Image 1 (tube, rainbow, N blue to C red):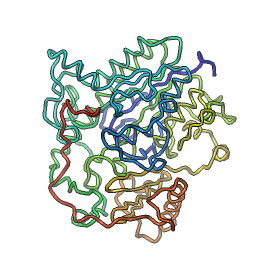
Image 2: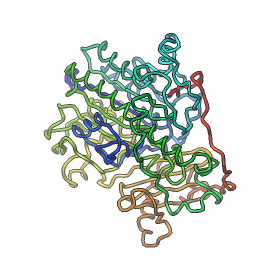
Image 3: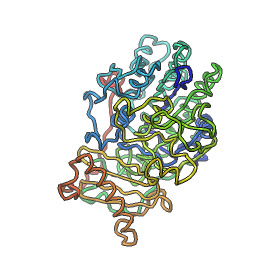
Image 4: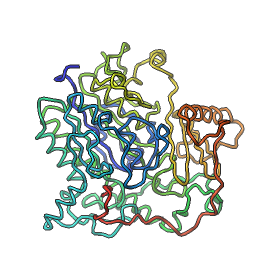
Length: 509
């Protein structure tokens, strides 16, 4: 693909955004006009999952195109270098292909200033350094709520001085000062709506009088807090430390943060259009993971329930492949079959964060095979050929999303888009849900013999894939290596997530 014909690429990521927080995809309460614009002009993949719904490993997957199970260390600790080869990373491959690569916002890398293949990086630390040098603009995050606490607050600086606005300001600055003779790859990475849940006005008040959705609580959670092997480990029921009215206000603030991101994206999209590069810029929007918000008595992430693992995944292809003539494959070559999409397409085939790298490379015309780069993902645009026969020619038409979280409470999941299987090694608990008839995961079908076939099929599939990488969570017979259940969960405890703007790791929000 000639350099001048390579499309620009904009990767937009939010932090901790649930799948059900986009108006055009089913939430009538929230205001997301610019994300809705992407949905109308692109493809929404409605069964997208984070293979390890925790910040650092999710970003490892984005950078490497590999699932957590491929490296068996899905819960990186602070101060551990990210296992990324700069020359074979997402930005490194694009840099090698002649792209100018730049990142703005939360990277969550260590060492903090490591670039891992980017030409240049601007971090939240740079925002806080700027604000410290200009005290007349205000002092951000002075409300005292920590960066994993769920209590709502209000921003202590005006909207134009927030980290969200700065992230778009810096992204626009790159667009205006880049090298115009080569294509660009820009990763605009928002730190929100991750706590602290502190939107500025007018977003703080935008949802104050709105009736927000109630948490989904499955019948299988009855008595869970008093059982050994409690899936929420040592955090206790949220009702023990977060009253319902506070939860609802926190959700309103969360919505406000998402709308603030969306409105700021309006500025970024407008600048792309004004510069005449909107049509030939591929845009991919997703999130590292979601947020439980009280679903099944839980908060935070690191779980494979819908609120935590199911994420937005929207692709606006560049105009050059935005017709039904051809689309690039994972190897950057045109497909023989017509490209079967129209603006506003919805695709329910499961996809994951491991698909971001091969999708970007496919559009950019970069061959992963030629660069000897392994991946667990595919170019998701190849899923949009019009017939099952043509999909079968590209691989197995039944596609799965899967993932794992290691650490003290390891767990695995797999889904084909309808059926979801989750296994918690701590206590050996298995859950099976029919997402078609039970999208809120209210009924665990594991013990219902009518669904033995689905449970056995998914269990066999995930074990087959884990054995292929020699995973240690299976023994020599292929059985789960379950752990003894923890003692009964301690009540009235929760991780407060306290750290200030002087915290040493780049997780500032």
